[in-house]
Amino acid sequence: MGLKNVIKSMLPESFLIWTRRKRSFHTLRRNYLAQAKRFSRWEAYNGVQEIGGVEARMIFYTHQLEKGFTFDHYGYGRGKVALQHLSRLFGVMKRIDPQWHANDIYREAISALAEYRARHLDAGKDITFLQHMMPSDVWQDIVVAPRGNGFMTITAESKSHNKEIGFAELAEHRHSVRSFREDVPITHEQIEEAVHIALRSPSVCNRQPARIRLYTNPDLVSQILKLQGGFGGYACPPGLLLITADLRAFMSENERNEAYVDGGLFGMSMLYALEYESIAACPLNAMFYRDVEEKTRQLLGIPDYEVFIMYIAVGHFPNKTFTCTSHRFTINKVFKD
Ligand SMILES: Cc1cc2nc3c(=O)[nH]c(=O)nc-3n(C[C@H](O)[C@H](O)[C@H](O)COP(=O)(O)O)c2cc1C
Image 1 (cartoon, protein in one colour):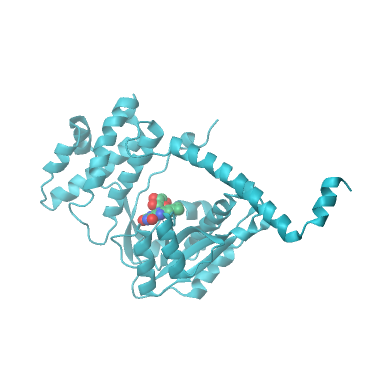
Image 2 (image 1 turned 120 degrees about the vertical axis):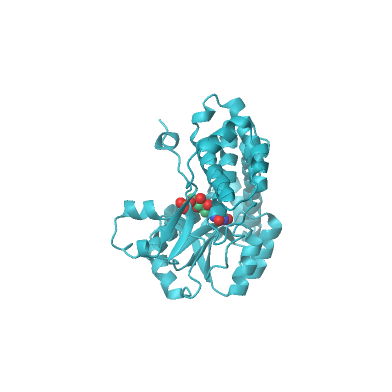
């Protein structure tokens, strides 16, 4: 036995654990700092002049307009902040992307704006503010673009054969649904069927850190969603799932982000499983600032060792509802050489 090991064998176990933890904490701090630096170098901050960030922000604000088209009662005049941001982003994109006019993300923003304009005109609303806000060439694109984009219709009937269709079709037809039947509650048993399927999600070394909870008390669900902040304008869903991941499944500093990977995989399995069970669902972010995280932890009694992955609003499909188109990138943007 070497001298080092002799000394080690004389030290109390509690001291050795303390030093191991201390070392791990310092390594984690260095790694998280490097992550923070990379994130802040590349995040799409307000005012970004780099094409990836401009496109991300344009998608974000287009999506806000699209969400407006899915409300049960359309809110005329809503979305002015999104419109202002889009107007500015069009200007930046024109400067930095020589192909801006053919850019798919630009075209999708224009489609949503064409629908926005048409809805307001149909209802006899004054739309001159929009014209004044937009660069004149962009406005021309909006005026000639066809309407009807940005949202699509979903019916309960179209979901009634989900167990009989193939996976590609199921994946193609899954959409985030934000309005649910109000007269039919969601039960623990119905969700359990989907959880059984999601249990087959892969995880690192099969350590299975994902955990899931169902909340159905309307007062509690409303309180949670108020803190969450991304479901404004929609009625309270009959059920809300919370997916977390248990940090006790992880063993070393290089696994520091794995909870989010394994939890995310479980979340995606749940979304497909719910679709398979013909349960309407919408994933909702749990990307909290610290104060909101603490409030949510307290409200729901989530232990310190679990991290938040996402919520999923759940309920039964109404006879007819609307969802955002949420265009996808073309394959060559995603599948790199
Ligand atoms: C992790 C995550 C968080 C999300 N958060 C929200 C949210 O807070 N509010 C919301 O209305 N939609 C939210 N969504 C739904 C997305 O807007 C939606 O998945 C996206 O537009 C693609 O549309 P699709 O799900 O219909 O294919 C979230 C989705 C994911 C995966």
